[in-house]
Length: 92
Image 1 (cartoon, rainbow, N blue to C red):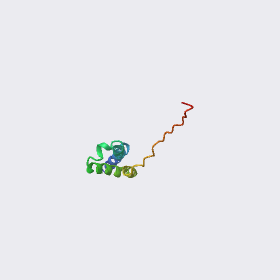
Image 2 (cartoon, rainbow, N blue to C red; image 1 turned 180 degrees about the vertical axis):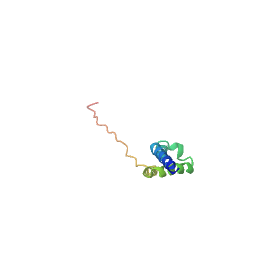
Image 3 (tube, rainbow, N blue to C red; image 1 turned 90 degrees about the vertical axis):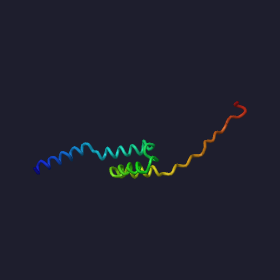
Image 4 (cartoon, rainbow, N blue to C red; image 1 turned 60 degrees about the vertical axis):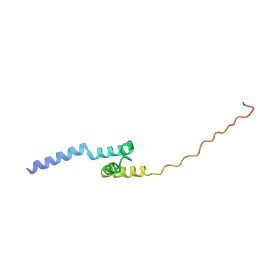
């Protein structure tokens, strides 16, 4: 009986290692945060919290990067382009 349980546990561990549900969940959460924020962000803090919790529990580095990117201040705008007219009366 112990041998059977040990083999079953090894088989389940092997299958979970091949399937990698935690990696798939983390990739999906990262995709939703970065590519489809309109579906989640601003629709309620519970949805956003669940998404960040899924990403934080599976891939903490990506969660920190996503949180930093989301809370970055907007970059300053560059000055307007100046267009100078170098033509003179002689070349017109």
